[in-house]
Length: 540
Image (tube, rainbow, N blue to C red):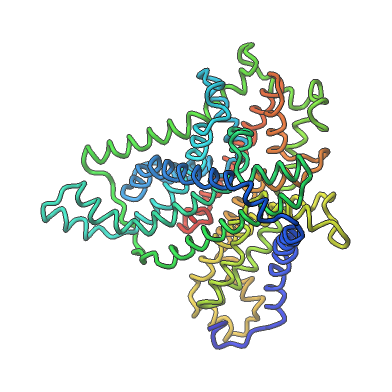
């Protein structure tokens, strides 16, 4: 059923629905078609695939190992967030998001700073262990928050009955709790696997040329060798794998058992429960906090000359950087902030429009729209960047040299987060409220302005903050599209980390710390706005 019993304003709804459809069609599906066109014109498509089967195999199994290690590492925190209320719980949930929204180049810089501090960089850089550690660090919050949120709404009656019948804690967990968690656990595992499968910056910096995945090979063929047909063929191979992963995730979400609406967390009562909370928090602090603290520390001491602000002062100076970059490193920060602001505006306009359509739709229509608009989130940023590079090459869409192409690419990733953050809030507005407004003569536009948007205002602001943070950290598509005179911070950090010398290394760490501080502030503001609404764009 669509719109209820009231006659809709089809012109207005056509505009609202047409804007996101046009945006997605022009800047997502058309670039994907450009990739397919290049692939179909390749004379040796299956030959390209066959020569890169070892790359596909490494991409698949490293993602599987990363996924398993992440679940094991984050499970204690998921348990604590899902079962207990404690002082600072909201702050902990907010801080857990920071590693996830950090750019992969910042995560890589943090790992390199840890290796450097403890004298193991020569042994760990360009190894599988470095990649696995970074993936666990990056995806920890997805498991802890998403699984913890689901766990907190599971009823305790079955577990309590099992304990009363004499079953121990372990037997109760494996026979009662774990089976009930399994669908959610598989769902979050598929998300983590997807992010590890399409990992780009971590593999490029920490894995190096010996640890190539499909994403890094696509980048090397397109940027390093200018073999766009080969790169496009690898994108299609990657898309086939991604579609299978996304289809599995969608099926798992449909079969997920319905949760209780009430929060079942309790204050820890026994000494064992309190130590479980403390131990999990300490583990998270060591695993997630240590790399970030060392990153800050090394940014003040890079070069071995004692602690100073030399690396930060060098960001505003062209001395020594002219051979490396076309601009001063600090200029990249202003570029990123400007791009993120425009990308956020685009993402909010498109995302809220889709959220309105989804909220007023019912059943299969809403599900289909939601799935289509989430496709950019499941597609590799490298594929998006290559598609835009190949498609936007002729009027009226020849904008590859325009500053607008970067915000457009970033907005493609931001729209799904806006949709996920806003649509549930709009859908939860009682139908009777809208019907009463219509009976009093309110037009559809006035209904949006007077009821829907005000009630969803905090969710919109929070989703906008997340889109802003995601844009600041986007690296995969930007690496294809940025102009040398208008680089973003993640691109500059990668360029600096790729150069020898203490000056470049210090500048990379200093830029990473500044970007981390900005993103942390945005995330904390986003979580504060969402206190009144537990549904967030982050908990996938």
